[in-house]
Length: 183
Image 1 (cartoon, rainbow, N blue to C red):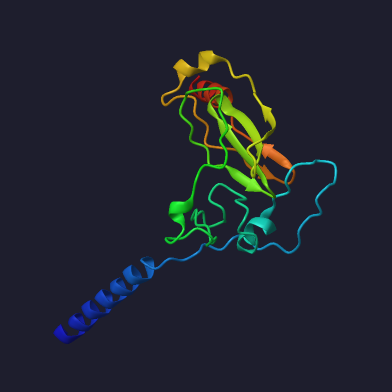
Image 2: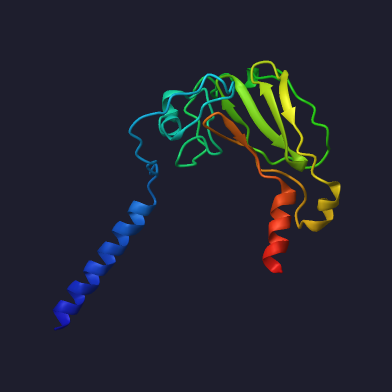
């Protein structure tokens, strides 16, 4: 009986070590299985991002198609042009002045040479990624009265692109829905 308990304990310890060791290895999370890509309508003029394109993001490393770049959200770029030997040669190529001094928290999305980002008050800016030239912007005109109704300010975490559309959350909708849920 004592030998059996010892063998059982050893087996449990070995199993625990295997689980811990497996958990410490980097593993990319698989994205959804997509059979075919929908054709991009020619009328939108906006970037076409879909599940298949994000699933194959490593095939176009010059793009940052989603918040964390890929389905696994690792925020890792496979680009290798910048390295330890040339990092000292980097310099400012362009900058874009925002119309607010409020905090900025957005992760820009870059698709086919166009950068999509957001700033405080849920404003969207779309820039030429090579030059910083503003292509267009959108201001949902969120009432400044919402500022005192939030815990953490009016920052925005960024836009999302999906099938020729740009999505952005606005603070007024979130607060209004929360108030409705409390009632």
